[in-house]
Amino acid sequence: QVQLVQSGAEVKKPGASVRVSCKASAYTFTDYYMHWVRQAPGQGLEWMGRINPNTGATSFAQRFQGRISMTRDTSTGTAYMGLGRLRSDDTATYYCARAAPGLLRLPDFWGQGTLITVSS
Amino acid sequence: QSVLTQPPSVSGTPGQRVTISCSRSSSNIGSHTMMWYQQLPGTAPKLLFYSNNQRPSGVPDRFSGSKSGTSGSLTISGLQSEDEADYYCATWDDSLNGPVFGGGTKLTVL
Image (cartoon, rainbow over all chains, first blue to last red; front, side, top):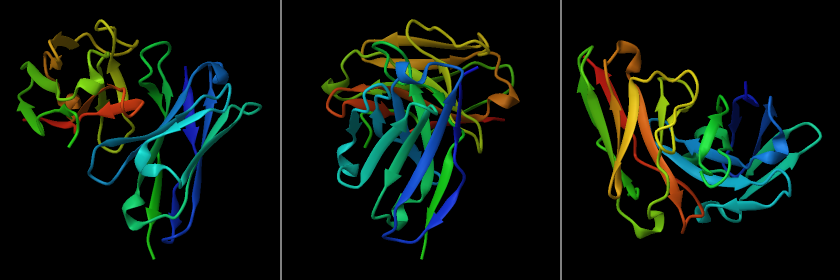
């Protein structure tokens, strides 16, 4: 069974940075893109970007350009998402989600989520 | 304003059939496959079905989808109390070069 296990909740101050990890198991990590999606409290889902774990190539939503990074460690099957210059409206649950194969490209399996709280 | 529009809420009683619509409002998403997700309270989204109404293993056949023109819909038959959740549609957005999600529909089982 495909599993994505994310790192734990964090509290950050405005202006700080955060890095969330997502460890994949039960499938070949480098065969599937990984998306990152966030959900503010009581709100809907917002796509942030994706990474090709095979090549490391990334694609980000424009609104996060300049303060987001995505990396991966193929030896451990772990994807990472970093977000800098945090603001209070970055308070959200952040999900990693494997991309369905082929032309579907949309998320199929999701991590359990990581709550990031930005507060002074 | 999402390019995918869903009703904010729907409701039904146990045993009823409910339908949630998802309409596209941008040419950037064209006729790309639409997928549906269920998010139970306090949990991560879960894929309900995709492409040609295929359901991942473990998803009951009470959940089905259909497509009409530029819109899609999710139908839940034989509504059960455990179906109470938020439901999201999603599709690929060529201008975003990524997935776009509908605003979500809260299903209440009365």
